[in-house]
Length: 236
Image (cartoon, rainbow, N blue to C red; front, side, top):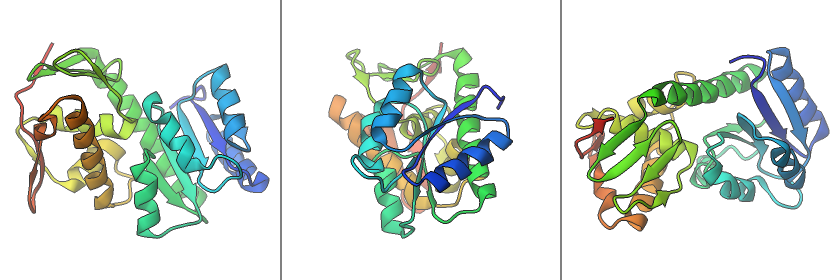
């Protein structure tokens, strides 16, 4: 990524906020900071961003609520939290965070996760040049981060859900393990956390079923092996 890459850091703790910002700036990123959700909204109203580093526990609107609100934006979110248990990670991923990092953390790990998320977004943009995948009347518009049902309705997906769907649809018919899906969607710097894949698949199926009865059947579970995209896919 270039120096033009914009990252917004949201944390109510001034020392943590500035330490993260200084670290990212030292590695060539353009960084804006916000102390709370309202300040984040003001920054995003001025212009969008490439990635949000978001604290969970903040006064007023917390990070989980912010994640829910921003799900449809497609902007990747790295959630930070002092709560490091697996249930806490599950909650963060359930509401739409793309990755989760427990405090305290090594700045090198923060950088690795930021780079992995940005690489994933860039790969999606690069692959989008062949732009539309068609399957069973659905359209997956890679360039515009858009999924259309057979009836032409838009389906709102988070960036993580969209990445999972792309990984599966682009390899239709292949059985992909959780480890492979983590690699395809989160990069080789990602922590191996199988539940992240299971949660993402569960959310994706739920949304597909909500907009088109039977849509969840597009993604099959092969017990003990992984997941497979069941429909035939053409690229046009």
